[in-house]
Image 1: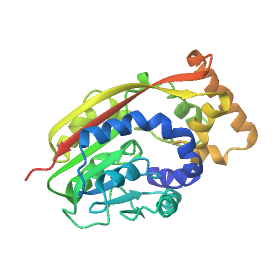
Image 2: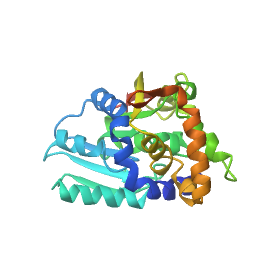
Image 3: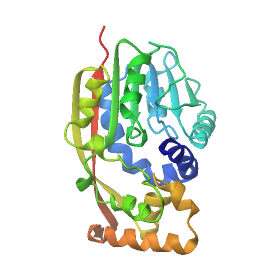
Image 4: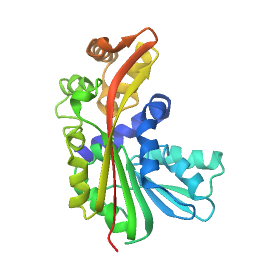
Length: 269
């Protein structure tokens, strides 16, 4: 059920995703790229890639002798990614629909594996990390970024607001990996060594009520149930969400606090 919610939910969110989230996710993605230290000519797999916010910058660093396989569970995300690669004339990247827990790829194919803000949505994140470990060459590097502790993310009420109106939780374990050193321990349990992690405090800046609600609902993790709501219910959830973030209003709109956790590790020789 959780896998189905994510697959078809991100199909719904795909068209809105970059517009609402590209700027907001950049601090975590930049930190992940810095910590993973890509080198020209390497081969990378980007898991839960979305529209390629990490994939395309990585492809540029890797150059013509490197390659990126970008995977996502959403058909629409993969389609948008492939369309963008054609528009950009980016020949060293390929987008494929694939489940993070069951990568349809041979063992030991990649120098680097990353998952930027996707593990929170995977029903079994440890299984996904073990798949990352499996497809890495010996000595390869892995990196992951997740949202941090719930109490440090001012937009977190969005899940409760939606869950009250549907029959099952949309993202029941969303903040688990952001607690304490959970992400580090998951990487170690998956077989990675020399694991290090960092926390990043940030703000999600929105210029208006419409932007804040668009990111929270139409372009985010609750998109599947949200898009099924009648207009009256959509107006209700907008009002409830705006009430939950009213303390973060500024003269310019909203500055909603958030937190990311970024971790990297290596596969033994």
